[in-house]
Figure 1 (cartoon, rainbow, N blue to C red):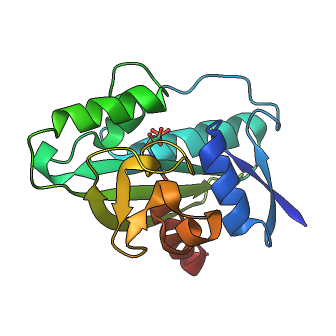
Figure 2 (tube, rainbow, N blue to C red):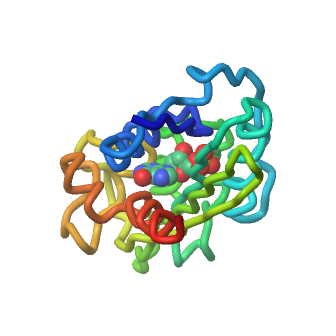
Figure 3 (tube, rainbow, N blue to C red):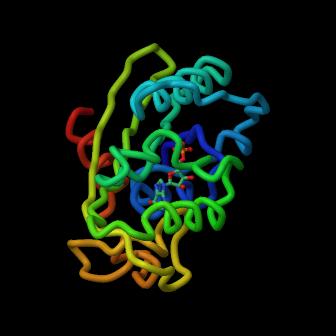
Length: 190
Ligand code: IMP
C-alpha cells in the first residue's frame, strides 16, 4: 500500500485521517517519517496554514505530504476562534482550557450557531498542489457532553447527527465531519 506522510502531530486528527483514508494509504505522521522541525502556524486563513505545513514537510522529507488546518467558527463571535482554535485560551493545544474559554465567552449568548471548517492540502514531492475544503454545521452547547473525539467535540452539537460530537462514535463523526468532507473534495480533484 502507498504511504502518505501527514504534516501533523495532533493525535485526534491523525486518528481520523487514518480512519478515513486508511483503505487507500498507510498514514504516517511527520514525526514517524523523521521530520523534527517546528512549523509556526502564522497564516491568516486555514488554507495558508495547511499549505505551509504540507509544503514544509514535503520539501524537507522530499515526499508527498498531506496537511489539515481546521478550526471552529462561531457566528456570535464573528467567526472566532477560527484559525486560533488550537490556542483560544492562550495556551496552544490545551483542549480543556479552550472549551472552557469558549463556554465562558458564550455564557449570555442565545445564538449558538457554529461550524467546523477544514482545509486539506496535498503537496507533492514534485511541487504539485491539490486542496480540498469541508464544513460541518451545528450549535455550541451550554456544557460539555461525552468524552469522545478531541478539541471542541464535547461542546459541538451536530446538525447532521442531532447530538454532540462528544457522544458520537468514530464512524458517526467521520460520516459527517469537516475533515471527511475536505478529504472527499480533495480526492475528487486528484
Ligand atoms: P490546527 O489545525 O492545528 O490549527 O488546530 C485545529 C484546532 O481546531 C484543534 O486543536 C481543535 O481545537 C480544533 N478542531 C479542529 N478540528 C476539530 C474536530 O474535528 N473536533 C474538535 N476540534 C477540532
